[in-house]
Each structure stands twice: as C-alpha cells, then as structure tokens.
Image (cartoon, rainbow, N blue to C red; front, side):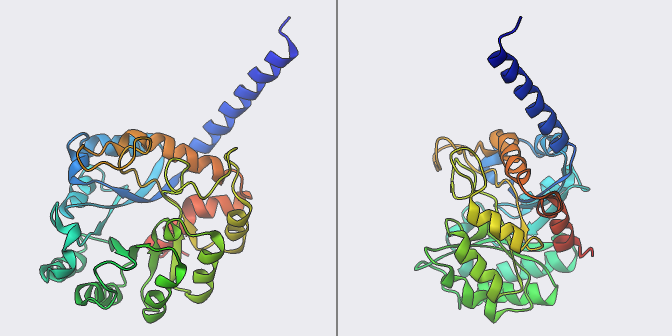
Length: 297
C-alpha cells in the first residue's frame, strides 16, 4: 500500500499537470518580445516561430535591434508576428537614435506601407539622454498620432511622475507602458492609469528572475497587484520579453540566449494569471491585447 503522504504528492502532481495542460490550451497574447542582432547569433527566426506556436501564442508584438529584424521574424510567421518599428535602426543605434533624423523618415515609411503596426520599444531613462523634448522622440509621437499607431514605451525611473507629463501631453497616443514602469509598485502604476486614460500597462519582465515585483516567494500574486488587476481588468496585458539569460544577468560580451527561457517565462505568466477570476484572467492573457492591437470590441 502506498503511504498516504506519497499518495497525496502523486495526486498533487497529477492535478497540477492537468491544470497546466488546461492553461496551455488557452491562447496567449505575448505583447512584448525581441529578435535582436545578438539573439540571431544563437537562434533563427524559424526556430522562434516554432517556439511561439508550441506555446499556443496566438500573436506577439516584436521589436528588434536593428529594426529590420522584426520584419525577418514576421516573415517566419505572418499570422502570429506583429512587428513594431524600433528607432534602433542599426545594432548600435540604441545609444544615439535620438540624433538621427533618418529615424523619422524610416518610421513613417514603415507605418505608411503597413510594414509596421506600431512604434517601440523605445527607452527613456530619467536623468539621461534623450530629454523628453527631443525632436526625434516628439516626431515619433507625432507619427503615432498621425497613423493611430500604438507606442511601446519603456521608462526607467524611481518614480511614476517621470512618465506622467509624457502621457498627459499626448492624450491621442495609445501608450503601452513596458513592464508597468519597471520596478514601480502597484500604487504608482495605478496613479498613471487614473491620470492617463490613454495608457495600458504590460507586465513582462516582472518574473522572479528579473524585476521580481509581481509575486511572493510562493509564486502567489501580491495583494496590490491582484487589486490592480481587479480594478483595471481592461488595461493590463502581459508578455515574456525574452532577453539575455535571466539567471546569469545581462552581459554585453556574449550572445543573448533569452529565447532559451521563453517556455519558462510563458509558464510563469500562465501560473499567476490562473490565480485571477476567470473573466479577468482571459482579458489579461488574451482579449485585452486583441482590442489594443486590432481594435476589436
């Protein structure tokens, strides 16, 4: 006879397997991935497309450095890959894109001919260049308004008030706020949602291996974030952001093997999403992204 403790463990494992299988059957909208030059060194666009299909990702937003690689990934799966225009048009553009006037011409061409569906990911750091009044940055916001293109923005700051004047000054731009502001607490994210109706947040890079600001040590959704999901169920999305090895930290002297962790990142998000009421879970996992990207009711 199997001891009761062992029996309970076996039953628990079986139940958990069933739950994971059921979760995997649900389509997932990954609102934030990359295919960068240092990722292409170790994985092909075709292999990424295969990973996305196996994880039942219905569609994903990709931005790349250089920006042309997003189109290469799009070619590998035109049904699931949605490319955004990155102002990092070359492998080294991230450090000086805001000085390059060709960025605006390339962005407009890509939006006008519908090669790109949106703009971003674009990084702004408090106290560092570029300033928010930079002409190239403001020009990209103008294009987002003109083409009604969503704008994926990454603001790294210790306070939500860095982003506030940006979203308030551009009420016609649909901002997707990367990582919900990074390490900001739920209350600061809530303040932005209250003040700027044109902002949606995504919760990528809040996994325990990086920002670690979403769940507790038992992988339970923190109370403040649970409350925020319940209060703003229509303006929250998520994604994986599979860049660099999340266990070794960011390294600039080695190829980016972040796609090796794609499956565990997907599973992490499916796990905390399962802790939400079913109707809210479905919105954050999938339907909010369909409305945001495709304008579906």
